[in-house]
Amino acid sequence: MTLAQIATVANLWRVLLAVAVVGTISSTVYLLMVIAAALRYRRIASAAQAALDAIPRTEYPRVAVLKPVHGLEPRMEENLESFFLQNYPDFEIIFGTRSAEDPALKIVEKLRRRYPNIPVSIVFSGHPTWPNAKVFSLDRMISECRKDYFVISDSDILVKPEFLRSVVTPLLDRRNGLVTCLYEGVPAPDFWSRLEALGMSVELPSGVMIADMMEGMKFALGAVMVVRRDALNKIGGIKNTADYYSDDFVLGNLVEAAGFNVVLSHHQVGHVLTAQSLRQTFATQLRWMQSTRYSRPKGHFGTGLTFATPFGVLGLIVAGALGWWPLGIGLCAWSYLNRVIQAMAVGSGVIGDKRARLGSLVYPLRDFLGFFLWAGSYIGGSRFVWRGESYRFTNGGRIVPERKSAEAARA
Image 1 (spheres, rainbow, N blue to C red):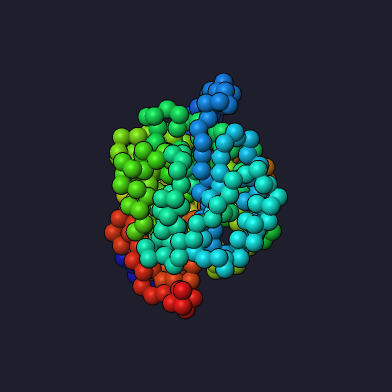
Image 2 (spheres, rainbow, N blue to C red; image 1 turned 90 degrees about the horizontal axis):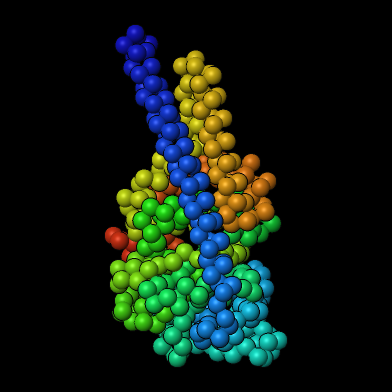
């Protein structure tokens, strides 16, 4: 190798080291923002809980809990039963499914017999003709409901008895049009599920709290969306989210643009995960990353600078190659500690996830893998498979069906 080639290689190593240093600085700034947002959220949550305790039960409105179901899921009976156990004066539960053959209905009927005092109804939507099957079902459920307050929640969500009181209360203020919740990841027994759940308890709420702190909530989280009928009417109905994979994000956008406040509740729920292989977990998370890339391209691009561990590892390798081992070890050690602090501050301190205390020691691995998922969202193309059907992302986060599964073709 000539002197010129050696110099070129050395310069390349220095450029990579500069990237590692810049990434370490940006991820440190992000950590400080996360801590500030977490303290703010806890302060607001304390005030919200105090206000909730002061409201008499007679002021709570009649509520419809909308539950789209499609097939069986782990702990499904426990998840659905938690909604029957609400400490709330007047509510009904409406289940939406494609047909009477859905196996989830056996669990619904079992719970209806167990809790005969809770009004339950079932709406059959038929095979969806819109890209987003969940929205297709919700539109029919809302059209057959006479109540004006809707709690939309997925079938893999686990809640506490005070859930309805907590999430409905902000909508008593007519300036608020939608309420959404942070959630704790509830893992299956396998390692990859535990790692994904840790990301739900740390990574997701970190970004949401910062967004709320910086510009206010302009989106919703699909685990729980509580909305009034007048807000839905003003945006033209929930059908206007039917062309999107991230219908929750779009619904929040539309409600906020219509002049209502979107409120981040002080109450958190549980998101129950299914055991998956590494390949399945990677595919699911990559699909969400792709959705974010198309829905919020600028913000998603900036997310690359919020990761810490990849820059620390890069710094260790590059600084070591240049013979600057103390610097490399320092960058790597700080990046690891950075993510441990984040996991403790958010997962344990805000979400109250007991698993996050010990899990904080492995959260840097989740951060490391998250960087490659983020990078993969740019090189993985626009196609994805969702519930056995193939789709393609287009500009703005819209999805276009490409081919139907054999099951869909027979429906």
